[in-house]
Image (cartoon, rainbow, N blue to C red; front, side, top):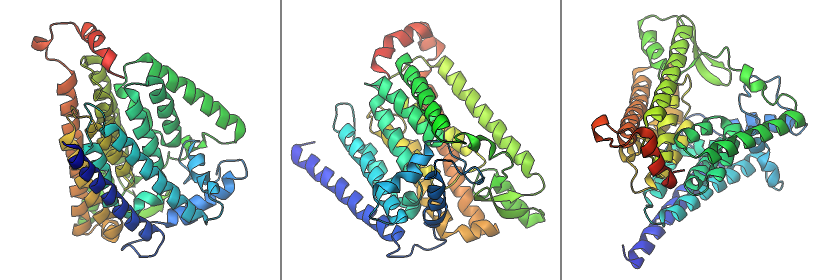
Length: 411
């Protein structure tokens, strides 16, 4: 592409980001009301309440809705950086800033050889499809850390490891970013960083890891894959309930424990598949790292007892990093994730009352959204396997020899 054409493309990209993010800010600042339940109450009520407790030097030990690793305290406390604003307004601006950081990282990466700005477009287009929920949760901040880690990974494995460990202490799932890392320096940096930060939080603030015991009695959240069974069963006399439980709307009643156990079993199967893939994989290229990360997070998302709308922010960010690599094979899964994001905003907050009532409109929205995520997961897993696991007839070298030849260009 010529210089003038590249400049126009970048101008369109930045202009689209600015326009869509301005609309998101108008919604979270309540200049305009977004249809459906108020998504900003998590910040103005729940986060603000945690903020007051955390300021006292302790975690919310008496609040079972605090289900986050210790570094999440930094996100909740971050509005203190803007003391001239109200807590909620400061939080929204910091979420917007994290969004902007991701854009800058993707645009910068897309201008390098063997890279593409397709990834930046995935981020610019995918995020606003989720509506104002994006800025009313701290997940966009976690995603910024994950994107930075993956983009640094190929050239700076220690940075990859350190950022991954920090991200995992923010919200656990970034630990999966290391599934495609082959350099020991990345794993070593992650272990050292995680241990150091965990020690600091344990010493500095009581109850740093109390969150590990706060999810034992959870039910099945109404937006999860397993919840579809109960949405349909309600039309045939199922006698369970839909209640606010542990901070989310969940099914409670007959057979919920069995479905929750099945979800955990599927998560175990997903982990087993990832382990098998890692043992069999022999071709590692720079794009393998984000491709594997997207696949892993998809696997653990669709098998979870909870698929909250903000989880899609993670997937959009990871899909964007994949498509920042021209050689990535994750184009179809990325498209499915973007489509799932659009259906997600139709489901929450626009159609959430239908979901809670389990009427056929709500069930259809969930079936389509979750179906798109399952399709994205299976497609990503298949493409990752085919790109990295050689067929025996096509492998002139044993796996270890092949790995040794390709490791220098991987992370």
